[in-house]
Image (cartoon, rainbow, N blue to C red):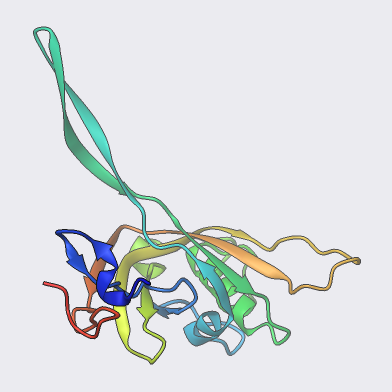
Length: 197
């Protein structure tokens, strides 16, 4: 009968490392627009799915005589996708609406300032930050992504259906400039109770 001491890869170490679980995370927001009494915490509370940052490098082809070589060019981060449950209070939806209105007014001017469908003069006026944290199930952060220069690229308020019972959802594509990853799980060991070296 196999035991934990016999699991692993011969020559590479014994034991099993605990995986990060897809359902232990939170996403937080800094400097996102507020509207209808809501704030970024309302989006955090209603978030149901999110994608971690994905980076891709352009390839630069170098041609020499009868051969080719490749080097990495500029990088591009793909937009993050975030799905929000649209709550009955409208707080989460209000934060999204406030952010969209900050990026460019979609509803139109109000009676106080007379601005009609104007855009924010610079990106610093509407960009926000996103902090994505993977948790260990006991409130400790094992991985953190600091996502900088965010704005809502697209907002999809989804469909409605008389025959359905599930929650109404809002899907967001969040375009951003840069992401930084911090890993902090070095203190966690294997199923055998120790750290792999």
